[in-house]
Length: 111
Image 1 (tube, helix red, strand yellow):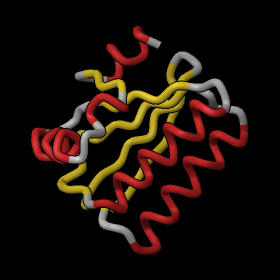
Image 2 (spheres, one colour):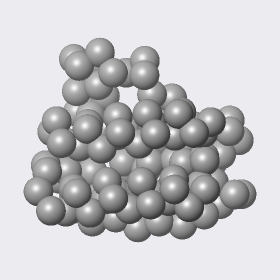
Image 3 (spheres, helix red, strand yellow):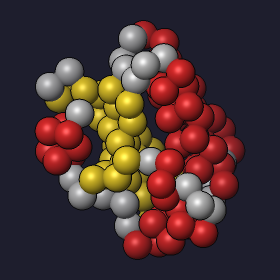
Image 4 (cartoon, one colour):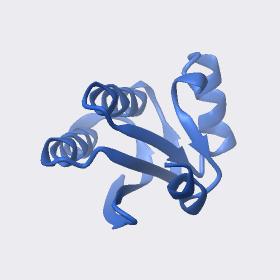
């Protein structure tokens, strides 16, 4: 699992890749997302294009990010959500919790 962060039009984009299955790497990503929020980044897009799979630890990262952002007047969008991850969001009844867009540009325009 790895991640990369960049900014476009004042919106932070976090690109995740690999398998998000917990452990120290997941904690590092979680810490980085929360550090960005504490720094003042209120609008965030999480790009899941290169995520092969995600378990409950990965869902926990997403839930923590959206909760923290909303509590601070911010917003979060997910982009490039694969069918596997979409099914996981549906099964856990989290699909409607997240704003989902097909790509980064569409998400930027909607924010």
